[in-house]
Length: 462
Image (cartoon, rainbow, N blue to C red; front, side, top):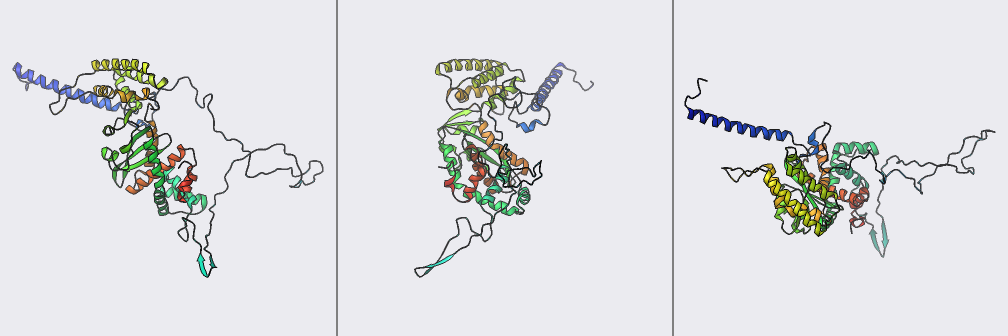
């Protein structure tokens, strides 16, 4: 107390300084508490960051209540069904007659009174085919045959082995060591890690015409999904970009996340003229020859964060989006007018609720998170409502996020890619496998044809 000033002016100055310090600390405390409250339902944090605690929050898109767990009424199951053409038939007769003890012979005439089918796989075995060149003499000339396409070494693995190794490494995210171990368990041959790498690199080259076809199909689609995720390759941060539809998946790796990558020759966006669905990453808006649709799930999560802090306009906007999502789309033009009137009314409510921009001596005025979100709803009204007003536009960008999920699984298993080439090989082969599954064809069969250098035989490549 002895150190306090005696005059009123100095006390007022001291109190003012303390109040400013309290305000600063309160703001920092509020920001830290807000960070602690972030999770996958109210921010862009992934679900894996939520921890192992039991979730009490609802999903971003509420599901109908009152349903029991398991398959619902009308659901078409995929249980094992009998086949009319079994590969092998075994007839089981009694060993002896129960009266005279005569031995029953296996080839005796009998009546079939019951049958059961067992689906199983034979013991795995590598089949070895030896290709021999023959010479013939005709018209005075000695003429020699040629090895089939793809038979290049004195001893090598065939297209089926290459297809299986690619599936195990790329789709099922096994490490090189585990691929080798599993191959040894199944076939008794310890395929070495360098051979696995060579197979994957060969697949990268074989897949080039396929990936060109996939890219062209996505580029011609009226609606496509775009997203990106970070990966570590060669000790540095890189980005895997996706452009996808319900039928095709296209992935490529680039050193950059923003405009340099989106405008690169590998990107689909350079010549894309349809509707691009994305999550408001600003570099996407650098492309003016296409239309944009913003992901509704991202908007709902940001609205949830405001609702948790008592925002009324965020609750109204959330209900509006969910109502539009639940109703039949696209909305007829007359209803669109009412929709935009309601939408504008919520924006007016938001403008009144959110604090005005705060003066910032070092730059432009600082907005609260709520006002930033309000500005997005105001400035990108058409892009946000495009899912409700135009046919074929989805509410979310989940398609792109699902197509990137395999990358995240691979990173959880391996941690990173040792080289940039390894990441590029993985992205291309995953594009082919994911597209095969979307086309509802066997990925193994299609990869085998690819390694046989017969891309024209791929069922969906035409």
